[in-house]
Structures are given as C-alpha cells and as structure tokens.
Length: 300
Image 1: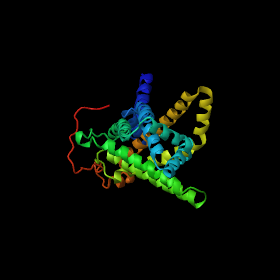
Image 2: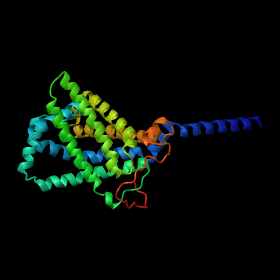
Image 3: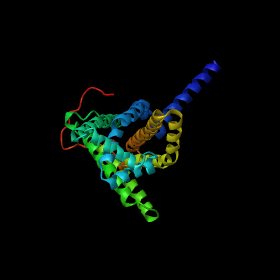
Image 4: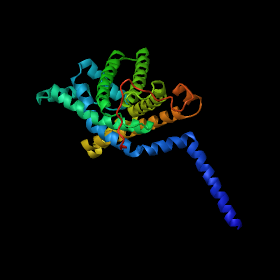
C-alpha cells in the first residue's frame, strides 16, 4: 500500500513538472519547433538553398558591375567565410556569356530559386499556425527572391563604399546589421502575405538578425579552414559538403529564431503585449487589403 502511494505521488510530481515545462517559455519553444519539424525543415531548406539559391547569388555576383561584384565577394568572405577571388567570379561571368546565357536564362534561374522561398514561406506559416495564403499570394515568393537580389546588390555596394579600416569598418558593420534587420523584418511579412502586423515581427527580425550576424562572425574564422581541409581530403565534393553543412547550421538558427520570435509575441508578459500592441492574444493578426483564399487542407 505504501509503495503504491509513493508511485502515485511520484506520478503526480512528474505530471506537475511536465505541465510547468509545457507552460514555460523554453517548453513552448521546443513544442513549436517540434510542430514545424525543425530538423527536417532545416535540412530541406539547406538543400534547396544550395541547389536553387546559391546559383542565383553567383549569377548576380558575376553579372553585377565590377565594384558591386567585388563588394559582394568581399561580403561573402568577411561575413560568411565563403567566396573566391573577384577574378574567379569574373571567369564565371565570361564562361556564362560564352555559353549563351541570356535574360531568359537568368529568368529561369530566378524562377527556380522560388522553390526555396516557397519552402521558407511554408515554414513561417507553420510557425504562426496560419493557413496558406492561396493563389492571390502566389506572387510573394518571387517578390521575396527579387528583394533578396536587391539586398545582395546593396550589400555589395555597401562593402565597396566602406572598404577600409577604422571608422569605415565601424560604418560597414552598422550598415550590415541594419540591412540584416531590415531583410529579416521584411521576409516574414511578405511570405506571410501581410497577415502579421509589422510590430509583431520585431522579435523575429531582431533574433534572426542577431543569430545570422553572429554566425557570420564565427564563419569568417572557421569556414575557410573547413573548406580548405575538406578540399584537401575529398576534393571538390568536400567543398560542397562544407558549404552544405554551413547552410544547415544557418537555417537551424533561422528557424530557431523564428520560433522564439513567435513564442515571444504569443507570451502573456509585457514583451508579448508590446509586440502585439494590445493584451488580446490575437492582436498580432492583420487583415490585408486583398482578401485571401486559404486552402482548407493542411500542408507539409
């Protein structure tokens, strides 16, 4: 009888611990991360970025004016630990011109990159537990890709203008941080079809910009060594493995930051109320001007 009471008491304590964990901020973050299948999603996004997004970035870097192209390559080296020399990218540009790459070819690359933005859109929708935007929001993944191209061009221009040391280096860091914040503020807004208020996206923008900038600083030290080591051991395929591993780490942080941002907005504390603009738990919702035709079926 006494043993049975001990087992019952232990079961009740375990249930209370589980309940407290489920209601705590870390517990809610873990639950939401599991809901969006974060492991599968970060692997899928990394693969799609490698196959669809990186070719677009290379084409833009190759076809941009020389100063901007050099700035983009400098940004990839400095912030990401990636990128070769300007001459190598110019070689890509020349080989593409010789092989007959035209505006139509660039458009095909641009459209293929939307597979990545659509996948990212689905992840954000699952994070916020929103239904798909429907056909009227089908243009938004392409709009985001175009904005990403503009962002990389502006980033390259920034690195060109602020090339140097001292105050220019401080200005470069400040502009890069402001650009990352703006990009990750705009990204969920456009991919969520404008159904979340700008103010409610501030925590997501701040956390995502912070983790991506931190990863960029770490990558500038460790990724070049990983690239050279893998290349010496496995050849060209080793470089691909290193880049893919870096992309997995990047999107693991991006998705984790997105989850944290959502849970912060949904929390009942002062920060959540400020982000929503009201005490109402659903105050973060925004009704766009255009009416959406949500799909009833769940999506992966």
